[in-house]
Length: 415
Image 1 (tube, one colour):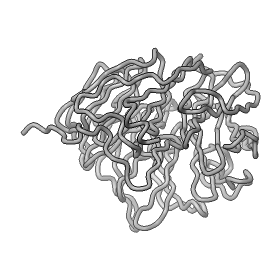
Image 2 (cartoon, one colour):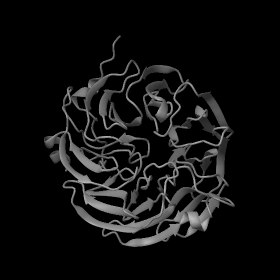
Image 3 (cartoon, helix red, strand yellow):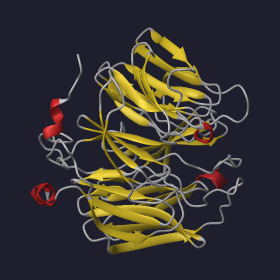
Image 4 (cartoon, one colour):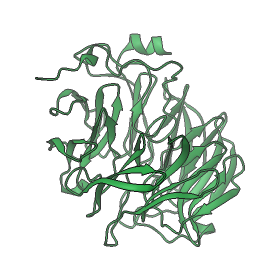
């Protein structure tokens, strides 16, 4: 029987009690690509959104972060990495701060920062392409502390610069620094920048860590260049590990671990493939592994009601958007022709943004690819993750940042 989702009368669903609709960090409030704010459109036939504002930006793949009226943009202008606080309603700058950078991309790609800023309480945290970790006051941009990680731990240059977004857990800030000895993962006091503990000799990947409770215990999950690490954030004690990387040097682990209950989905290209791990007191159990199901190049997949949705295959070889059964890896459907891109979930809608600048809103169903709306707010190349916040979408390439509003009435109600 054909599945016609009943959600379409209110796209993106209703925010849970107390939800603010903020997008304070990479992949949203809980780092799983899920938007929890007020609805964007109230129709089964969504119309193209209105452009609230546009403004020029510098280089970079770092997506925006949004808390309240403030949007934080991290980009490169000239020979400086700039953290800029913008009014999300108007696009006008509240404040901006900067520091010099000499980063040069070995492959001739974009030379701006890659890591999305993290907003936590009164502070903003940024991690630049050269490995400069900084803490700024959200209210006025005053720099609180800064650590040049690449210099401190003598980290050799990677393929594409430093790209992991800082994770805040309580009073700690966690980062896959990639230093040695025993400084692969580092925990900093988030208020002072003081190192609290270090763990592993793993090199840094381009994946960002995530925290979640499994079996009543809070854990931090990393997908380093070597593979999977689950540890206790308060001490750095390693609870689970699994070697999961390409057998040849050109390995790029970039997708964030996706935690669903006591299971974790990991995925990478370059012959590595995907796997679902089940975590228990007895250790790790691999439920399945495959390089033919859903091998993510750089974009993290999302989960919904027993299924994964994401891009399979390398960016340069024509990837396909897929729906895969979470517990087995069975491919339910596969859609080509979209190019590479990113995916987010908003209620029962899949939000797909391609590198070409196209945005699709599609039904989240395992039956088939069912697009509802397609529009193009930006030109190529779009590699930064968009932010969904307060009924709006904020999207950038390496020239422009655009704010989109889907419904005047709903956004005014949300604000």
